[in-house]
Image (cartoon, rainbow, N blue to C red; front, side, top):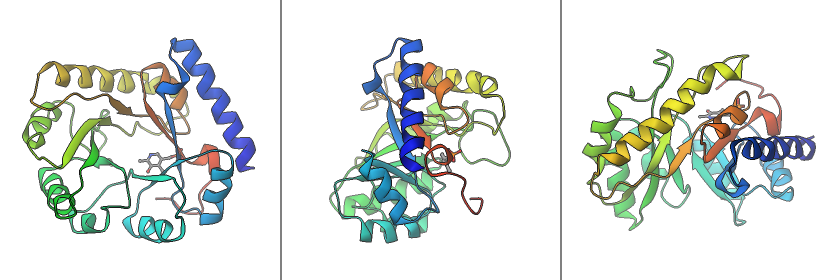
Length: 230
Ligand SMILES: *Cc1c(COP(=O)(O)O)cnc(C)c1O
């Protein structure tokens, strides 16, 4: 099932790229493996998947203990500052930076390990109470504030759009995130040249690609329904 699912998602990504006049190589598919066993990750690896998304630090620790192959993990979920110390060497990107205390702790822990880490700023485009992330209006000042932290490489923005049956209704949020990235880049903040937009999940990744996503995060569409909601 995982193989067939990946083939379908791949085909959809290719077609969305074509519609948008984009090259397939501009979009990286992140296979969101949260709650799924290592055996599922291995099946996806056999189908060529190399980038996996997880949202729990403990799960990242366990899975990276077992999987020593050349694949990478991204932390895509809400992150508490007291767990950051477990992440150096385990993940190549953190998608969910949304407060100064967290950014400072990431700085401290990665500096301690002589590592830099790619980060994305999470933005709550639709202003949903249930979601983490900065409001779009707060994002520019936030980027400026954390831009001086030397072990964080601010690569771009991430958003989780509202859950919907109609992906078209999320187009404005994806378009807005891209515009926000361009606006922040235009501020000319020292050392900030963002090139990454993490947006689009199983229900709406094709629309996100049409609007400029460079990472899409697909869980259910690859691994099937999760047994419990996270
Ligand atoms: C779970 C999750 C996804 C994947 O969701 P699906 O709808 O299963 O594709 C993407 N991004 C984040 C941040 C998630 O937590």
